[in-house]
Length: 171
Image 1: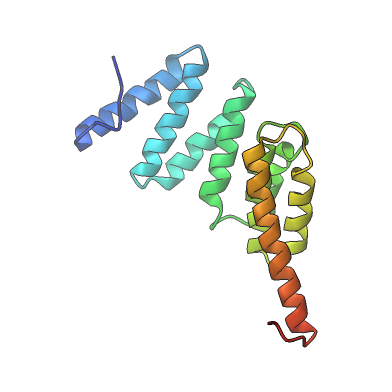
Image 2: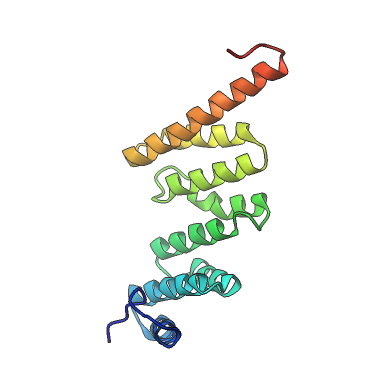
């Protein structure tokens, strides 16, 4: 059966689609198992069931049998959903395994971790992390450009704040 949650028009169809994804997440023997679990998590978030959605993402993120690609997507998604509710240091710790040169999630993890550092009013750590990340030769060019853009904003804000603190007039 084809499952398409985007065209499900009523609650019964949405519930049936969620149940189908949950069943596939149990029964499937390939990567479809994890795709179904991620899809089900997304549907739970769409339905406002944040706790259940996070539990579904964390189940994939912590499943050592899951391919690393799915675990990484689940981890970064969970951190994104918990951005405003969980302690920043806890979330940064979850991202740390992905903050490694050559890791396919390095750029996205660095972006999230830098935002968490900024949320904690720690632009120095955010800038240091971004400076390190943009040197990764495996980082896609568009990601490097985006991280450099964030870095420029942090540097400009930091130097502007330093000027204000020293009593200089900003022109």
